[in-house]
Amino acid sequence: MSSNAARATLAALYQARYGADAAVPETTSPLIETLLNHRSVRAYLPDPVSDDALSAIIAAAQSASSSSNLQAWSVVAVRDPARKARMAAWAGGQAHIEQAPLFLIWLADLDRLEQVATKVGDTHAALDYLEMFEVAVIDAALAAQNAVAAAESLGLGTVYIGALRNQPEAVAAELKLPPKVVAMFGLCVGTPDPAQPTSIKPRPPQRVVLHHEEYSRSAQAPGLDAYDAAMRAFYEAQHMKVRGTWSNHSAKRVRDAAALMGRDQLVDALKRMGFELK
Ligand SMILES: Cc1cc2nc3c(=O)[nH]c(=O)nc-3n(C[C@H](O)[C@H](O)[C@H](O)COP(=O)(O)O)c2cc1C
Image (tube, rainbow, N blue to C red; front, side):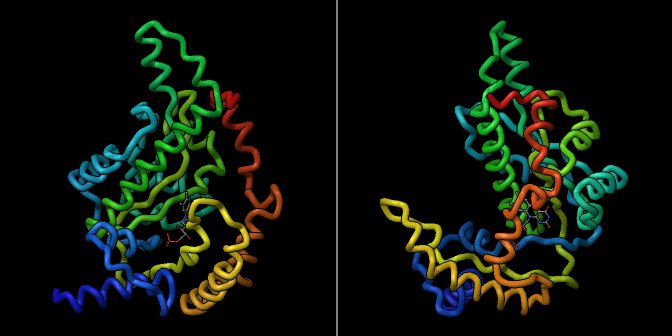
């Protein structure tokens, strides 16, 4: 590609994220361009994801940093259609879970550390604290996002499935998870269906999320107004049935406990699953 064509491709990626007048940095890399090109995919071809590709994706996931190198995460690869169908039902009927040839379930896993401590004859009381649960959640999320970037670099599409937390105990029973292991989210993986292409979704201007030296709430307001306008245009262009602005949509998601669609019970479920969260 000529350098002019490469600049135009890069500019298109920035414009998709930040709008027509987006500033385009000189600094770039193939990885940054893969990341900028991200969009969630919810329609897949039936082509399987090979064991070889899965192995490369998991190597990328395992290459993520891990708090104190504790490796407090695991992942279950599900390909069985009947099992995917049960997962789809627990996630509120999300058909893309059944359609994706591969469904990865990312686990916060403190059982392995309990086993390790027991093996060397030590106690493991720290596992009962919220801090260790956070360590496991962060580890799982970092690994999963590396997997997403790797999959996308191979031309595969993905979408996270947080709705798997609607029924954490059903998922745990299905996957035979021991105590102190919980599914944080699923990830559909497959070849995107070219007949149902998806677009890059805008993000808020950088001034909304990037603070220099000190956090500023007031600096965010104009950027959020701009983001509401950008998302309104995106919803219309994509024929998405979203009422109101991004702010309206987001406010609805945090309105009350009912907005959590059952996940307001998560602490109780986690406690039953062996996480004391002290
Ligand atoms: C932890 C997590 C959970 C998610 N859960 C779901 C889900 O259950 N179903 C779904 O369709 N999308 C889900 N998503 C995808 C988000 O809706 C999507 O990432 C967001 O709208 C931004 O769009 P983009 O990924 O296309 O840029 C989830 C994303 C994350 C990070």
